[in-house]
Length: 105
Image (tube, rainbow, N blue to C red):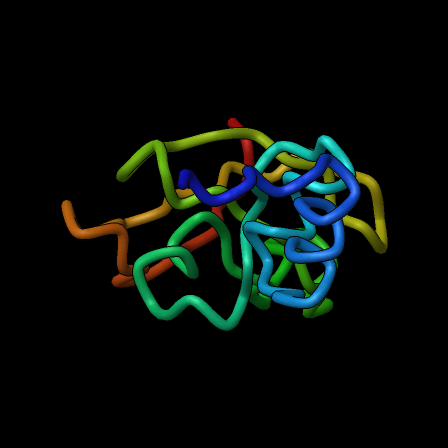
């Protein structure tokens, strides 16, 4: 005699009892997201760094995306609003090696 397959209600109860991230995502129909507790590999998505404005000298915080490797971009100072050239030096593994700022010529 074959065992009776679990009912849809029993399947849902089983998923609720597990309460791991994948089960919660599946239960609510969510896409998998960045989970901070997963380790350093996922932390390379971005990093909060402090930059010093070359115009006013103030230090301010900025979130940078480390998935694009080393690059140069323009950002306005959060204090004096003048444009700043920000240079990111990112290792191929996604680790931030350094950041520098310069006046936009």
